[in-house]
Length: 246
Image (cartoon, rainbow, N blue to C red; front, side):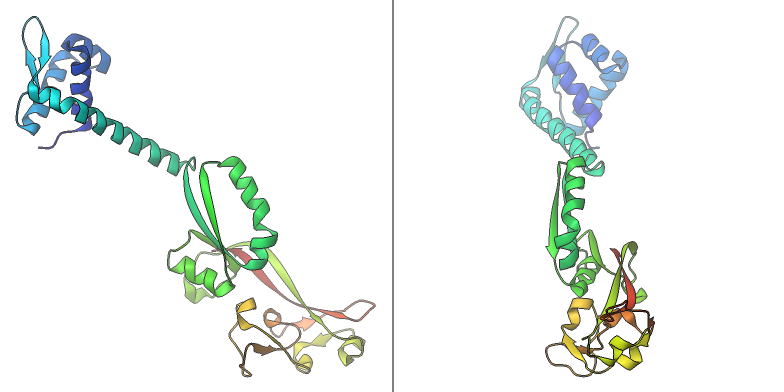
């Protein structure tokens, strides 16, 4: 049989008052129930902790030895309870978040300030990494949350949309596309340009090298038609891609 927190509290109450009647009032227990609790503790430890007589209660040598240890045990128990309570209620703790550079630099600071104003005891660590690493860190459990483009369903992650990013094609004024009111990406293959595949979370096309070759509308536009670029004819709307928490 192992000692319990209830038994520790009972022993400390009796050791403090050296009176079963006063200790039972303090614990809101009947004297018989308190006596049984102390007896159970002594049986668990293997010997008497208190000497009782009709006139007084004293600690045995073992009781004197056990008293500071019992105080420390109960203090540690109470500290653990309080620490966990604060953690579950976000009064204290730490959270790790992975976010894409653009989001980490432009959007996250304001959100973090609002969070810290409300939960001052929670320390937040931000990992500024590219989209693929955000997904990887969430899947591996290295962070509690990530801010990234919507992942593939095969990643088996819960995605909560936060914003929609709009991608557009930007072409020179002398480009044939600038003269058109509408264009499809299929007609915007040339000229092609390079950008690092990781910056948009894409898989490199043929063309390799330092980056993947893409049409000017970018990866997320897919095969969607582009609309009117306005009077200047310099921009053609592309597709949209969701950014959110995973």
